[in-house]
Image (cartoon, rainbow, N blue to C red; front, top):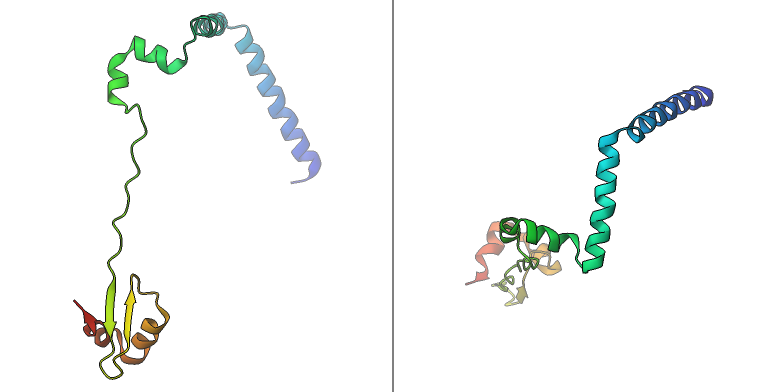
Length: 121
């Protein structure tokens, strides 16, 4: 799209948005809502209340459904240490993951099934 076409499209969209804004500014319902919001904020400020407290007063059942304090993050249980003993050399590996360099080398050389049989239970 050329720059001129893009400019004309943006200009047209801006005119549409401005027309919508003018229409909304003349809406009496919007004016009433804005006036209510302003008065409510002023009232909350005069009593030192925030929106959460006001909602708790007006609808206590809603507050009971939602936890006040954030829920504790679930912790993963610690990984178990796996012990592998190579039967020929007697070399011992203790690891919590399968990302151990020597364990990977053994699995590549001897195969996963064979190395898993070396695992001590």
